[in-house]
Length: 185
Image (cartoon, helix red, strand yellow):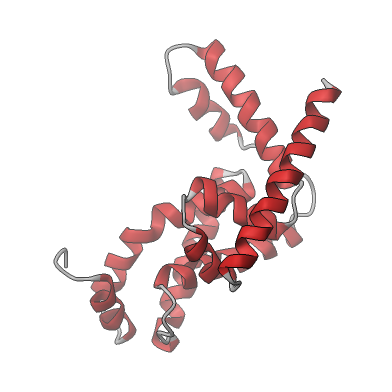
């Protein structure tokens, strides 16, 4: 399977080849997990939602039609919809799971540096979670997934110009929100 292109694997998966779908899963599982993790802030929920993304994709792969949009865009859309449902169902404030905190503390030599880094990351995630879901998605796709504006435009079903404009407005909003948090300290 290693010599397959993504398009070949996708065609085989559409025809019911489980091994070809497995190839696609391996290629995208970490990216989808990362995207979901940054939208939820929870390893446990991200694992669950990632599994559901691929279950849904597998269940609907036979209906997938190539329209010049990358397969990854389809996966991100599924992930986006599941995360939106998750947020709706869990409207209370999400806390970082205990296992995430333990992994952070156990992963290095200097816990005092990790605590400071963790607090900064926690504040940044808090600021990002105050953004609209559309802006959260943009920030994660741009900075975590490191996708281009063109790739983000496909995933979010917008023009590249609209993404650039949204990106500019989002950075301004982030700057304001970060300033507000720093003034509160």
